[in-house]
Length: 589
Image (cartoon, rainbow, N blue to C red; front, top):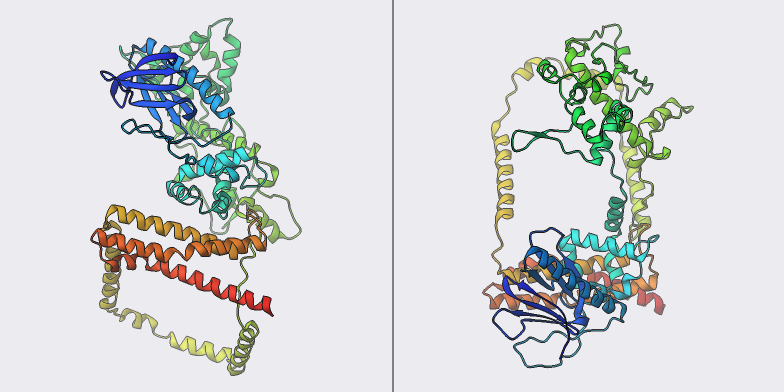
């Protein structure tokens, strides 16, 4: 008899029952039945997930080797009892999964349905991603990083791109192409994901302005978090000074924040124009009123600003322009007309300056704007406005264009330019200018008599409207292919497009530093492999035509839908045959 390790009341697929873990099986039996509906052997357990502590329902999910979805169980006992029962199962299953992972990975038999007689099926390989690409996951696609990080980047890219994930399952897991071949040419996706992970989040751009919340009973509450305290001290140093002077000698921390949020100092720091009503409602505070400062509403700010010498970012530099015509400030440029808004505006400016300084402080000097003066004024001016982030650090040489009779092409170009120069006439500039001036005489009268025929414009507008309507109709129209056939057509096209991409990149690899760097023999073998896959595309399309006939779809419609794909495949195969024949001829010679 098997030994029972733990047991609990649990529901499975919203059906009540009993969950039991023995020394060899995990069993769930529906209430009122004797035969277990779920039987999981210990070696089949691969992963374990649990609901958070304090959740409404206490759940446990067990992932299997051959089934990532696994089984979900909900413990139905009272909350405290259910949590204790779940923890007991969690501890035992964690030990079982640890033993499975430490053991050598071996293919497991597929679970036998309970409704069929016991039968030992032939072992089948696991369909998990780790097993299907075990020979490739240990080799990083990107150089300079470890295999675990590279695998994590690939996983995140696939999960964020469902179409790419489907393509990966169809081609890599089926063994048609390897993992490295699939990612060859897609390194930019991994680099972008790595760059996104490496980005450091900066300071928030909004002003620190805690908003009071009204709770039941009419009380006002402000939630104080360590991050909020840090932001207040950073944004308003006077509050940090008041905290250091009074806590904990004169005030406790709770009393300090309670009195601060009720003081005039807090209202002075709020990101809004202070009204006279607010100032009258707030009571005086003998501690915080000592730290109040006079409103910064004079014409000159209280805090002196650094003079800007770079004319490219100095907004006031145009004051020196057009002195002869005058550049007196109009009403919108005269500071101080609304003195109540000056403190708020200067607060925004100081906050923006702190954000910029914090960002520039973390950027290496090479990333900053160049301000070194050079000998050439034009070069110096250009150096001040150029940004390194917008310059391509790698020179792209492109793919060399293969031309036949290249010498004859350039000889024809030279002969044509020589004949054009010989046939060109010498133009008298004075005569040409006089004719041009004579032609402009009376242009005002002729321009006022100009009448444009509306028919050409109306015809052009009708044509564009019909074009847009046709495009919208095509986009909104749903395909009338049966769903199963349409999915097969899409799968065939996606796979063939991937084979085409692999074929052409093996013959003409992109000149990037992230390419795989395969040798010519490896590229030739890869091209031959992809050509073999492409040669089967027509057979797949013919099979789809026959499948469409069984579902009542005319063969012509399937052929028209797949014709662009077949044309691209035939072009690639013809190019490969010609290239192979040429290579064989050279070897024979």
